[in-house]
Amino acid sequence: MAEANAWVIETNTGNFDRDVMERSDSVPVVVDFWAQWCGPCRMLGPVLEQLAAEYDGKFVLAKVESDANPQLAAAFGVQSIPFVVAVSDRKIIDQFAGALPEPQIRAWLDGILPSEAEQLVAKAAGQEENAPAEAEATLRQALELESDHSGARIALARVLLKLNRYDESAAILDELEQRGFLEPEAQKVKSALQVESIAEQTGGVDAARAAAEENPDDLELRIRLADALAAEGEYQEALDLCLSVIQQDRSGAGVPARDTMLNVINLLGSSSDLAGEYRRKLASALY
Image 1 (cartoon, rainbow, N blue to C red):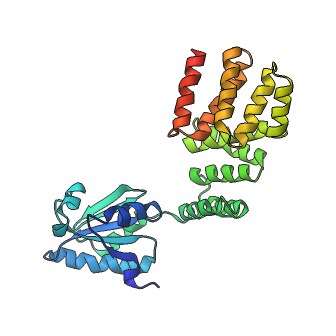
Image 2: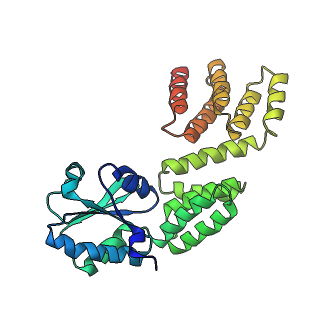
Image 3: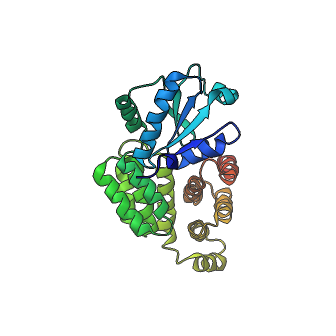
């Protein structure tokens, strides 16, 4: 077991963003607002520290002396102490006030900590880029524990796409879509799958570009080039090609060109400036 102080930190207003908010991206952080004069705080603090050691890294305990950090206490709405807040992914997910008995604190901790399946999904995220086969195995373990874990299913569809197992990836997305919706990340995987599947038929960017240049009036070849470019991450050129097709033949070749544009826009994500720019250009070209 790790030493108690391995998972316990003292923090303050100046270091809070680094110690708590940034750290909460990778592990839940339990923030204990306390004061030297507070009797219940002196009862609760050692229990939280003992549990931090026992849970051995499943959460980090960050202690904040409220009198020394009044602005931080005010920002969290602390009206009485002890006051305990759980932060995950930079968001408050739960809280309690007062010195609860240990069994209640354990139950509270178990409610805020990721399940074993969620821990496996997080592990797979670290494997996905350089070891997709290992990520697949990890995600399948997660799904054995929680077969309907949507995050694991979406991640598995993405990993299978990386492994060029398009049919298996599509099957998972089809199952997810039967619920009547797709999460943004699942929609992004679906768009990537469509781009990759079509691009596979083009023979790559060089072959698609040569064919399009040889037949400049063939709008379908221009769309195939756009698909090949999108599969290689050349998103802006792909979008410009599709836009030129729509402007030439909106109701004919412009229809598949629009679909390719939407796929690329979905791939870029809603926060992308490039996606926003070409979403506006597409709307202008269509309407």
